[in-house]
Every structure is written in C-alpha cells, then in structure tokens.
Amino acid sequence: MAVEEFGARKAVGIEIDRHLVATATQKAHASPLSDRISILLDDCRRVSYADATVVCVYMGVTGNAEMRALLASLPEHVRIVSHSYTFDGWTPAASSTGTHQVPTADGASESYESEFAVYLYHGQGVARC
Image 1 (cartoon, rainbow, N blue to C red):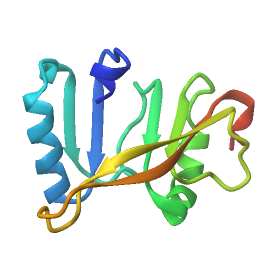
Image 2: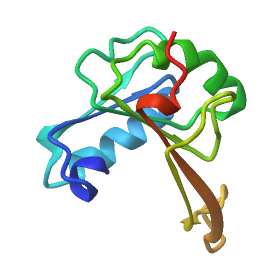
Image 3: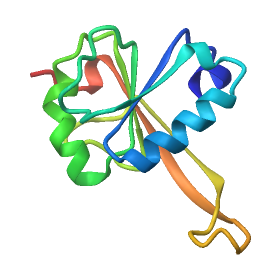
Image 4: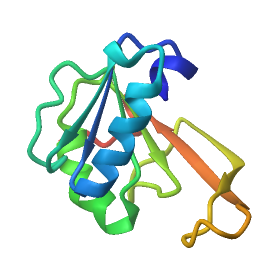
C-alpha cells in the first residue's frame, strides 16, 4: 500500500465493488499504518480529489477515457499514475514494467506471474481542459 511502500501521509482507495472494498479494508486494517488508510465504497467519478497529490487508476481503456476530463481538471502538481492502461492523447512522463504474483481465481492452484506496466502523467504531459 502507498503509505507503507512510498511513505504517503494518507491513502484513500475508491472502489465501486463491495467485495473488493471488504477485501481492501481487511488488508488495510492489518497494516501497522491502518490509521492512514481509508477505503471508500463509491464511484470514483463522483468523489472530490481536492486534497489529492497523486491519483492512481486501474480502470481499463473505457474507464480511463471516462476519467480523462476529470483528471485533466486537477491542478498541474497532481501526478496521475495508471496501472496497465494509457490515456489516449496524453504522453506519459515516465513508464515502468514489472511482474507480480497473481493468485488463481479458485484459490487452490499456485499463483502465477503476470506482467504489467505503470504510466506516470503530470504537468505538460496531461492535456488540461
């Protein structure tokens, strides 16, 4: 989680799926930094990002397209990080690839390694509305 891995003062997760909120909340409560982690059951298109300094999205092509105007309206100092999917028309300031272990859906099989990419956008790389 961002507060552990990157030293963030506060991390707020926004998820529309109740099951994923429950899972994320359980993980957050197990963290020694749980007082700095909040998970909200909400629609990310309807919440305020007024206090955000970094916004991380994992939405897919359609979701990124839907979020593009909202994210472009944020102040230029806000960094936008997209997991696996780019924003059409925006040039990432940086990108990185990696692998991570993914558990199988049935939970009985061993996890498998999956490749991913992460894209960072900020300042001039984001087409501001």
